[in-house]
Each structure stands twice: as C-alpha cells, then as structure tokens.
Image (cartoon, rainbow, N blue to C red; front, side, top):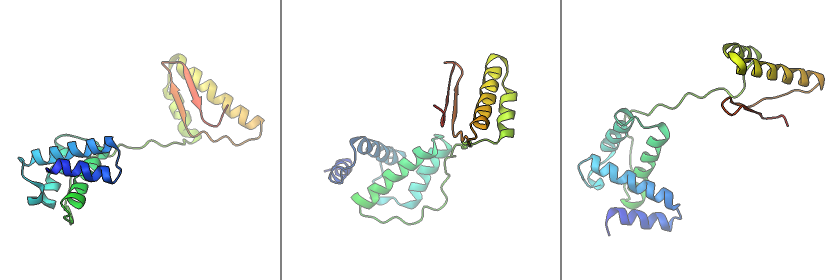
Amino acid sequence: MNLLEQTSEVMRKKHYSIRTEQSYIEWIKRFVLFHNKKHPKYMGEKEISQYLSYLATNQKVSASTQNQALNAIVFLYKHILQIELGDFGHIQRAKKPEKLPTVLTKAEVSRVLSAMSGTYGSYYSKLYLEIQIMSQRDNISVEINIIQIMSQRDNISVNGFP
C-alpha cells in the first residue's frame, strides 16, 4: 500500500470527513512533487519550511490555506510515518487579512456616512439618524453589531432591530 492509500485508510479509521481526506491527499501530493518526488521519510523540518514559505511567497496563498497545507503534512508525519517533527525554524507566513471592526464609534459612523455620496449616502444617513432617534425615544441602548449595506440590492440589514 502506497503513502497516499495509507493516509486515506488512517483518515477513514479516524473518521475524518471525505473532503478533509481529499484535501490532505492533495496537499501531500503537492509537497512531494515540490521536492521532486522525494519520499517524505527522507525529508524533515527544513523541507517543510521551504514548502510552506514557497506557498506564502510564490503562490501567495492565504493564511488559512497555508495552515491547511501544514496540517496535512503534520498529519502525514505524525500518523502515517510516525515521525515527530521538531521546530520548523523560520517559515514565511501568509498574511492574514486585516479585520474590520464590528462596532464603530459615533464619530467613525459619521465619517463613513460623510464619505458616501448621492442617493445612497443620503439614504443611509437618514436611516442612521432614525435609528438614533428610535433608541433615544424608547430609552433603549441600541447595539448595532453589523450593518450590512447592499446598495446594489437596495437592502440594509441591521442586527438588533426587527
């Protein structure tokens, strides 16, 4: 039984999903092909680091994609080859996307609304003003976690409001 068949068999015994199995098999194939079909038992941390850095710098994969490749390779070494891996040294990590805040201050909302122009700018400004008036009138604290503005569909969804 070859390496990929062994991997499939172990993943099935461990009840991994079929999609995870397929994904890990593909990452293992790519890892081996990247190193000119050298068997993984003859490679170690250095080669893994090289491959992961290549994914980040040359292939420009996302951080989650790079992590998926790493998890597949670690699974191979730990569960199939039964080789404990040490430190990978310096790996060029894929950049994680910058997260946008989920809550904006009143000043930030004002800046966003003032940057909008045309019909939608005035529409969203009026909507925000109405939300403020409703929250003051009903003496409630309104926490708006997410405002999804889909201007092309002319639709606004505000969590916390019916």
